[in-house]
Amino acid sequence: MLLKDMQIGQNCVVEKIRLPFQLERRLQALGMTNEARLSVLNRKGRGIMIIKLRGARLALGCNITQNIQVRKAGEA
Image 1 (cartoon, rainbow, N blue to C red):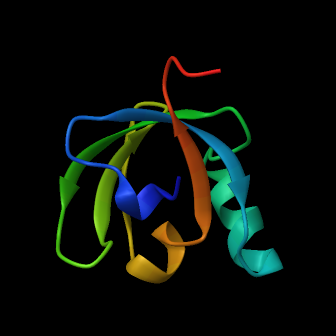
Image 2 (image 1 turned 30 degrees about the vertical axis):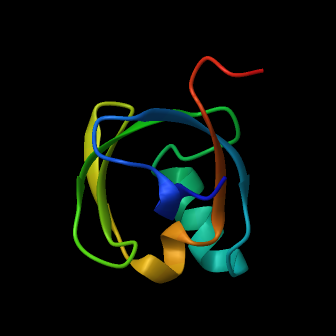
Image 3 (image 1 turned 90 degrees about the horizontal axis):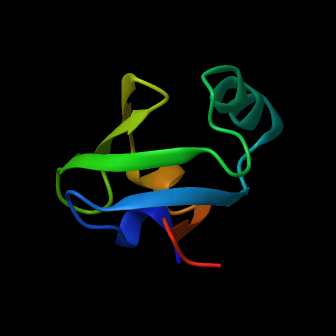
């Protein structure tokens, strides 16, 4: 499942990030690593989201959210 498909209030775990090298490293520096838990705080149209990650709020554009693979928290 992709991050852009998550709904407001859902929690998920990052499985894979498929972004250009520098952008991926920047997200990792902010704490978005494999197995990082995040929650969706708000959605703004076609994949634009505000998420909570390790206590910080981040706004991500649709080009980013459609390239992050996640699973719902609690699933194997």
